[in-house]
Length: 161
Image (cartoon, rainbow, N blue to C red):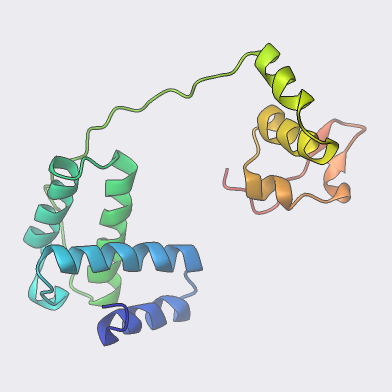
């Protein structure tokens, strides 16, 4: 199904519209799952009812997280609203209800024990990740010029938040 002319045309359209590669892959994944869920019916022959059934099944049968279900919805909204130009309207689906888990926080003693077994390079990376709350890609993109030692600031480029 990955060589499907339909999916290839969606891929081409997304690239022409400047979507990020990760968004392209994610949307194509969910569009493919939607088509397979409905036994390979063409999306043009389906509509909001089939989208509702698919999203509800993600919550009921697959027990996906709320954000996962929202990503699937965004992919299908793109498919219908932007690509097929068949607006879906309101979709009354069963929302996923997995409770959010609070992250566990490690103690200062545990942090020190972790740092003791790392080489200097990894200590710096870990300290930035943990202490400044950076994501891995944000940390790996840092350059010396991004550090303002006088004011105790770090400039993060292309960050998510």
